Length: 125
Image: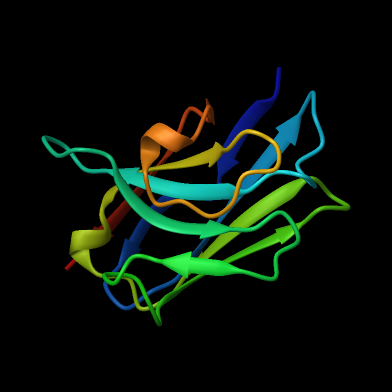
């Protein structure tokens, strides 16, 4: 069973940047599509970005396209989310998630089977 642990969240002013990391233990991430999701208070969990097992394909929510970049380092068993030009509406708990082996990109939370505990990102105006 894989364990996913997110880090890098915090409080930042609008226009600032943060880099989230997701570290895995118990299983290599190299054969799995990974994703980032977020959930704001009172709202449903929403898709942010996803990356293929090789890192060659990525897909973003329209709300973050051009500001966020998902990447992975399979040698270090980590996935990252670089967030630039942050806005107050980006405030949420951010979750790292993993699909079953061999499956492709997806934006649906239901398609991801392993989740981290989340890291809080707060953007002040």
